[in-house]
Amino acid sequence: MSSQNPPLKITPYLAIIYQKLRSAFTDLLPIIVVIAFFQLIVLRQPMPELGQVLFGGLLVVMGLSLFIQGLEMGLFPIGEAMAQALARKGSLFWLLTFAFSLGFATTVAEPALIAVAREAAEIASQGNLIGPGEDAISSYALGLRMSVAVSVGLAILIGVLRIIKGWPIHYLIISGYVMVMLMTIIAPEEIVGIAYDAGGVTTSTVTVPLVAALGVGLASIIKGRNPLVDGFGLIAFASLLPMIFVMGYGLLIFS
Amino acid sequence: MEFLLEFGQILLATFRDVLPIIILIASFQILVLRQSIPHLKRVLVGVVYVILGLALFLAGLDKALFPLGKIMAQQLSNPLFIYGHEITADQVQWSAYGWTYLFAALIGFATTIAEPSLIAVAFKASEVSAGTISQWGLRITVAVGVSVGISLGAFRIVSGTPLYLFILVGYLVVIVQTIFAPKNIIALAYDSGGVTTSTVTVPLVAALGLGLSEAVPGRNPALDGFGLIAFASLFPIITVMGYAQYSHWLANRGKISPAKEDS
Image (tube, rainbow over all chains, first blue to last red; front, side):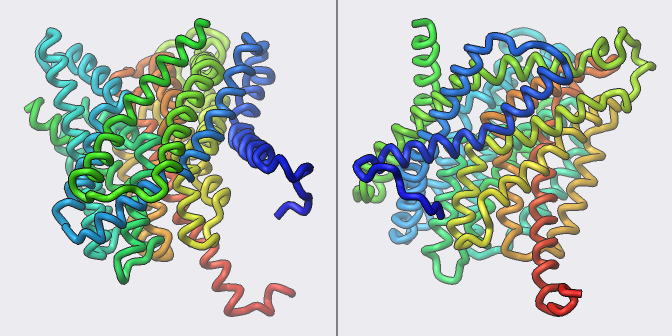
């Protein structure tokens, strides 16, 4: 769209790098404005360790540009290539196995989930919901993690099955919502907040692009599917099912 | 030197996160599909960029944003800042926390704009819709949703209203919207709920939730500290479908009575 030519023809790479860095800077500008506004005007405090903050900001801009470049070169093509190769192979079993493993493998070792599960277990132990002692805490935390990982695996599996069969997404999501509401009524109060948050923490920054490429790739290779209508929705399942499973786990453990 | 050590640890942790995916894809390629990935070299370089980029991104956030953001979240929920003096549980006034709600809304908006997963999904959506869905349009709509969600979540913690009431009403709104929204936006709208909450948003939002529930007298961090992330995943669904409905309505109105636009 720009009417200007890059300044030097021998440096197209520099132009690309400059463009990536500038767009990453634009992405981060709102955060800088918000933090500066509250720090300087509302809280009326000087910026602490300005050099440190500027250095960190530089790393963030560089990291985001590299990540997005890698997304376009690596993650998107690999997700789509896998989807198309598996669809061409024509084996539903292997496609669903891949879907489940992708959800399970990326979730079970997710650091955010490990932290949340541990914290939830300690809170449950203090509230005398589970027995005291390290054994009870770690077995409860492991149970939570496994429930979430299995549910994310199942979620991707159901999502892929939906794309293949062409089921409308809203029936599945709305029945999911009804399940969440029913479970909320019967599940112990202490697990509800954790369960609701578990839905949000499961989808990591590397998983999302891969899963999105998988869905869109499948929907564009299967006849009669529209990538926009059918390709998305996998992440929605992956944030809904863990809520149901974690509340189910709470129900199982606490009663 | 110390920084290099820190960065090395983050890089190692990022690599460990990505390792299960690499193993899974490699074993499927070798054992099940038995074919090589097209443009393998380019893809591998891309994966290295992703790991390196993510590690740099996280290291930078750790240095610049998280410490400052977490301190700010605590300061803004401190009774000394809100009321000018210490208070007891029956003195809590939800209306005194204006700056906290504003901070929640703005930081929710700002971190969502910087969220790499959302950038990825917006990129795909724009590509698949041949540009009908603009990347920035989607990202801003989602960010508005997160900002409403987080400030409402902060209000919930201050006022002590039960979490499930908000979620219940939110789900009902989503269900009603689903009936009326254009069919091609529904899946993307549901997805945008899940992608908003990752690397940048979660640590800050969790700090805000925990800080608030510790600072507001009468709240229990174990019960009230959770739930902000659930708000941040629910409201973008509503704003994305709402925006799609609005532009759909606008386009239809233009088609039916174009003459009225001029008068």
